[in-house]
Length: 350
Image (tube, rainbow, N blue to C red; front, side, top):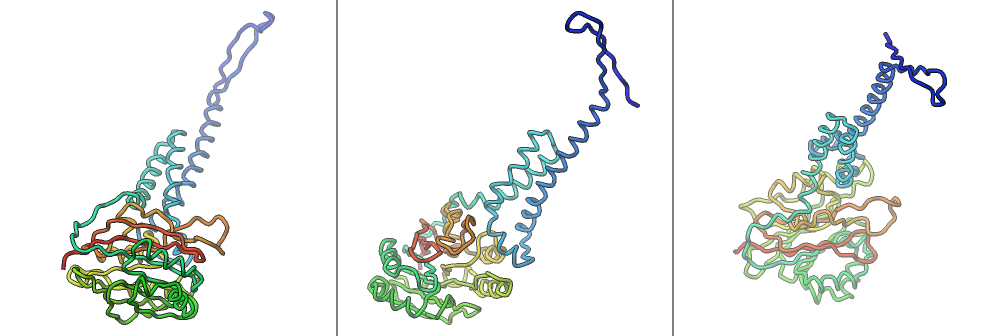
């Protein structure tokens, strides 16, 4: 039943009385309809954020495309507060509460990367590590050598090392800077190398997909350090997703009783990929994350890539939890689509 309210008053010109008719219940019904649609739109906007947060935290890698999309989690995290802010403004309490919970889940995942977390107080010798993907050997060899000099690198890991690239690095003077090496140059992107200022003892390479060389570095005054030049398959199409996963799973896990380990290179994974997080949980720390630089991107530095694609962090230096992290850096290298990454590490005493 609609109740009609009639008000009587004089017209503006002082003439005959004017009746004003209002229907409050009808107006309330229209307002209620508008409120329902606003709530529906807000919940619809909230749902993708919620699903993304659940998948990311649950560690589910259901399909090839999700394995690519999850790399963009920091961007989704930055956008996630929009829904609760709108809900508060529009007075949709439950949507606002749900939005805040999702935004907090993203914050817990992403914000620590921008906050230094200290180090274990190691007091041994300092080792400077540099890692560079040279894009099928197309990166400027002179720039790579100059970067090794500038960062005073003790260890350099190289990914996508071809025979031609290895020869070009030698001509640029890399052997004078880092005279010891364990290398496996191959055509295309499958090869890798490890160069060192200190003597090396080679170990069998990890050959799941790409060839990831490794060696033990004999650091003066410190314990032996096993270093791996990391480069699992790039999951650029569904057929390589398993190769990528198996390549990461083949990397040595950290152990408090085992050798000190450092993994450096192009992981083709971010800190939001479940496989990399599992590796970290074995006892590694990401150097950039430890110094509060974990949101500095490394790829793509050049094309060909979809225009406007947000950059992500695929290159890392991981050191086991006994190792202190004094500094980390990201460096442009002309000719390659990856930026090089560096870390200054402090080893535990021998």
